[in-house]
Image (cartoon, rainbow, N blue to C red; front, side, top):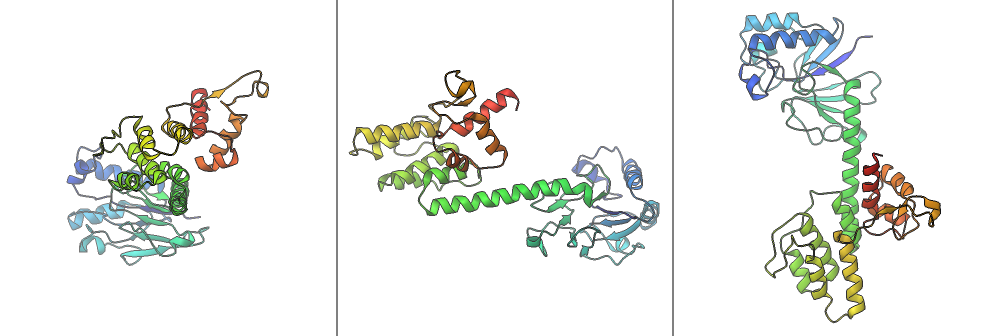
Length: 346
């Protein structure tokens, strides 16, 4: 059965693209020969090749036609910004268009092909794939979208089956990050700073507004001050004007002492311990004690088996979800299990 291939950005005849994209060719002629050879090594005479733009750049019509005739397969063009009238007038197997919805056998929805990347595309919310070029690998795919330019795929056309593992991996990460963002907003709206912080650690693109921790501290909102202060430390922002050094591990302990003034020594000590755990000043570890759980590796200070926590981590659970499943697990217990597994090469 004939195959369907996708590719983009050959830039036949374009000398400057060699330096611009760091292509491993010493001349335009060498680039042309290698690109033709790699195309014909995978494409058969009855296969379809969808070229997603920038087939050539300022190439003389005669040379352009000779290169085109050497390339195997039924060729289709999605017009790119470098595709002039000479490129568009080549004997393509279908009329050149700015965008096409290509049906691929076995794929429930057409593949949306465009020279340019889109953040949203037709039926993307139903799982449709979007392929593009133009960016020469500088614009990573998002969800089920992917750059099929030759600079990304060993200078050759590729099938959807070759692309699928990357597309699925991207989509899983996209869904995870979207869930992280949703959970963060949900926990923050509930006023649960510790849970929100766990979400934040998995979404490093979220940062606090400068001064938030100071405003919350002055207003006596300790939980919000703790949350934002921790974020401030995580993002290594400069020292604040009240004299708290955010690079100092004791920063939040001093913040806690100030914020909890008048609450009583017992409450202050409990909060200081909580802060110390959050900052990693007191390390939880995985231990093996023959007198505890028959020597099975477990999280120090608990009867939680390390392997049970590790299994939850590998199932993709967030830190706060793991701690919900094991209520006696300390704040840094999940990180302790990760470190233990890394040390063992697991």
